[in-house]
Length: 331
Image (tube, rainbow, N blue to C red):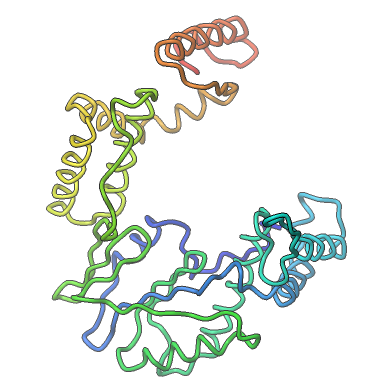
């Protein structure tokens, strides 16, 4: 059913997508940054309404037929069965879930996302002109918006009336000191009305990461550094702030035992990743991944051995792939 999700312009796929959207945003003096969060979306989604929304999409959009031979009636029946037969055991007693999307089912996020998409489209289309948001971006049940300062209360009331079952409720958070946290970034309103982004950390954040002395592969530890640096590069929009964030990362990782050489190596790897991404994709097209438990010393040796074995096989069959694998590397 994944193809039936419309992915409207209000959808925020990931943080970097929102950063791009905010590049040209200007917030006027009479406007305010605000975020909305749905209270317990998955356990409060009304299944009957959600299934009805999906049924309409299934009947209107035939894209799902490319991946299954089921009829639309079968899709709806299976969906209703999955959502209505969730059982669990607690202290020796069996219980049946009576409301909300099925706990632990992979179909639940899709059901909730479809219902939220329907709900937000209805809310925006029916919102009074005076409280229509200037910008509206949603990631699952987290919403970032820019609205008129005097329309915040009206918009919140309107959102909480859209779901006629009364199950879906929105709670809001206004900007404070010209800043608003959203996902993993801090959106800051500048004096000229433009916005910039910083990395956001909750007050309970401890800067504790995988310790360098722990029994893990060095590549895992380097990936911790690359992840933090990559987040900095993707979120932080101004160079001065980016340098401050990198200093924070270095200090935090240094406290976790990371030596200077690891920081330097991870940074070099991160810089080369973008240029080699297309090349690596082609190199790994015919490779198979093997995952085994990590054992210090042994795993590194096995990795080198497997690499030589696979490379030798590819070289022997280079004519089949139409490539000179003697000059390529694979894993």
